[in-house]
Length: 406
Image (cartoon, rainbow, N blue to C red; front, side, top):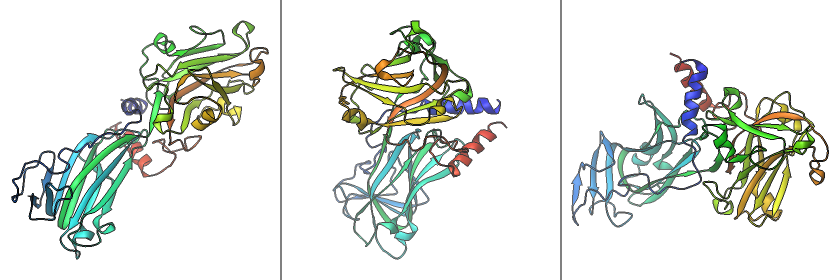
């Protein structure tokens, strides 16, 4: 397998795990240590607990006799060792939050020597620390319960995606745990990453161009060349031709938001930005203007123009166009009942659209989404994880690609 194909396989896998904005319940089994069942006034030494693995530690599951359980039921005591659980695979674009209660029997060594950690475990059982908190950061006195939490957000295209997420508590003394909860939530709704389309007809059923919709110079197709994909294995190729009067001198495509898998209620998501990733072509006419229209079920609509240099649409690098959702709401669109989204190219005169000839070109679109997490207009050189930063995660991901050659 060559280097390009290695990246291709990796990115397919990552794209398949991008999900819409939801929050999970507790991903941990037996997070409150209620199993096994203990009779009132008793305890179990070195218990076998569903979901949890105990390593090199003396442990006790108390009904009574330890610190009064935080929830009034069982609590777990561990001395000098680890207790861990690996509940899920890490998903790109998801955030993971670990919340727990902890107490110690003494303040001399236990707080400083004990910690909670989120780890990524790869297929070779290599472990990578994602987030950690020392008990000394929040425990202030002995025999008192304290709450703490740590979190990790997995960037798009991260090496950690599809690693196993491990929750691990290390005890450096006499430590008590209770009510351990791991939640996961996505930070975006991806309307379309263009991975599901098998042919151009299935694409046109969703993204209507001049072939299936109103007269214009638009034509869409599926693009799978590596350079023309922002993530995954496919993107949308939007060819525009504004030179022909028979095509209306403008080019426009239409997306049915209301009947999409996520529906038209943008307000309920809590997501504040509409983000389109695009890549131009050097042959494109830089005099054409790009617009986006959002329409609600009452036919109220607002048109927004790309506010930066039109030359970006002839630049063969990936850019993103970020629009505040509030812009549409302030413009009279009911964002709780969005029906359509349109993307188009014209001569920058919407009042007289279709009255003067323009140019031709090709633009690629990918990962059109609602998000709170669009940060930069362009991916930096070396930003392989697409998180807007060049850091250790990019080195890890690049190394994994390189090793896949051998």
